[in-house]
Length: 290
Image (tube, rainbow, N blue to C red):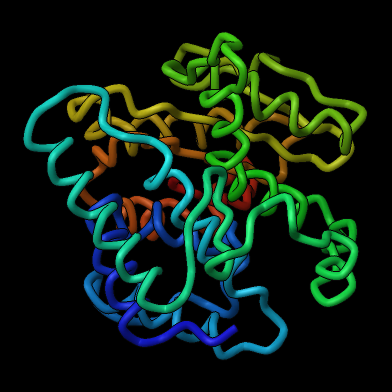
């Protein structure tokens, strides 16, 4: 379904206030937005990417639109005040734009034509037109799918139904445990918290070692703005440790920044990502900020 320019403009403008370039890149890619992120300013990028989604015949545009809006629409600020008022105003803007285009938002990222209810959808017909993705061909493809979907995986656990106790992802260990659960059906040998060889007189614990793939995942949780300023330095030290581990050829640095506290996420990625070579060894570093 084609998404109108006016609808894309409203949704793009609202989403631009919710996170950084890097965080929204992950959100859009995890939702299935086609192609690479448009090389545009923060104010124009998201509406253009949505419009491209709506004109791509191979993409379920309403599914993508619902996915990128889900967290914003379903999760209000915790405290009363200006932030809550702004959220209500922006949410009303999105609902009005959807209504003008004959659409309606339902919880958990469902956008349907006016008059249609979620229970009236026909999954069989949708699955024939928009088939489920095949199993990833490589561990790298698998990690991109799982990591980009990390925030969406949290959503039904933090918004549980029928009075069930919601889960919280307020610490590094919370997010690591969720990622561990997501990895286990796909990868049989996952070794959490294995020690690295010593560097500068100290060693460190790996978050996850996947020995069959010579790959390590290191997950950082940005606790506050001061910690965000130290993330790059922490990862530089981690890289030196991991380069000395005989079972690690690739390091995936995952920075979870729920409050968008990093001031230059793209700079962090550019500075650290790539092949790192010294006399001690070679390591391929991948950086994801979400």
